[in-house]
View 1 (tube, one colour):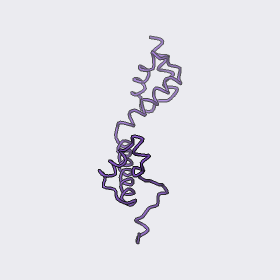
View 2: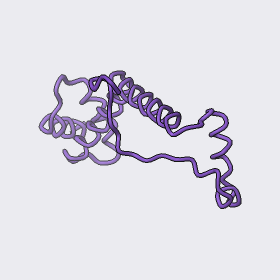
View 3: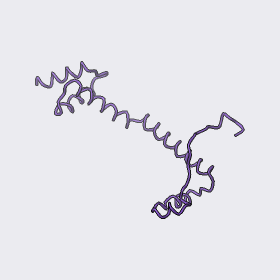
View 4: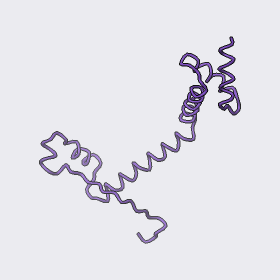
Length: 121
């Protein structure tokens, strides 16, 4: 690596163990099949594949974080937790969460008030 700004170091060890008879006799021959499919001949080839998969996973995680999926799910869990902490029963949680979603910045006081209102009706 001539340019250190374009290199990285990752202290991990990877290997294909498919070449030994033990591996083949235990029914895990998929290692050698995967090696052939990926056309892996050297440690550098394997390193490039592992790095590529890692980068792809990181990009997928970033996409998930910036889209609605995880954020909506996380908010739903937070609001359920808030409702339960405020004292909502199992039967009240869904309604309390629905009402908390309508508030700009729901907190414990809001949740307690909503539970009180539900129980008065």
